[in-house]
Image (tube, rainbow, N blue to C red):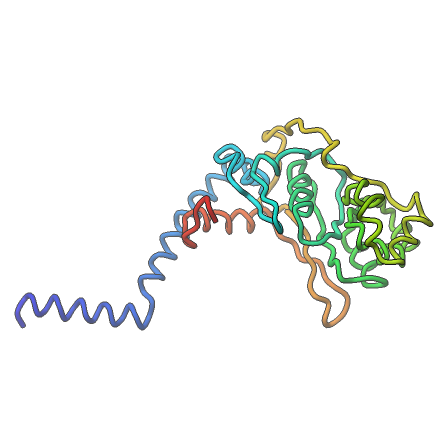
Length: 261
């Protein structure tokens, strides 16, 4: 076979094998994995394992780029960095919203582990989830007040202090008019049932990166729960190592992401 024909045949065979077995994609995955592993090992060596540090890096690199879009509002990395203060270990019963992200970041910053409580549960399932969380502070969206009120005694018996992240002016003002009758009764009948966390009134002072050097890759970054289809929900740990690994793979651009995504 002539050299040109041989090369053409080899290329054709290569394209065929690649199309059938996705060899190129496998090689890309190997490269991405090796690069991510090197970065991960350097992270561990430098005691830089806190997932919050990845967020802080983005604040420094692109403070005014859009980090989060919710409904018709955009938040820059700098916006999300403001208003974070040290809190106790907490359970979070919240809707998908900027407040959810801000709360998680605030807790990560001070090495606190949030437990993500399903916002669709109530009664014994809610009490069980809070018991498993082993927290002493519960942050919730005010729309979920009736579910908490239903099991208030049991929740209090677990030692929880309860705060809403819904701004007070929303709860008492225009927001109040649109609440269900059950939610209004909670507010009107139990004024001491919960307190308010107003992010805009909290300290904006920094919390040193060095203070997070004690975070290990095996330390929890959050607790998430199973659906509970075969019984009560069970807590699963998302550790800093696993979260950082996912971040590093994305950083190697395996998913073709850029600052505009």
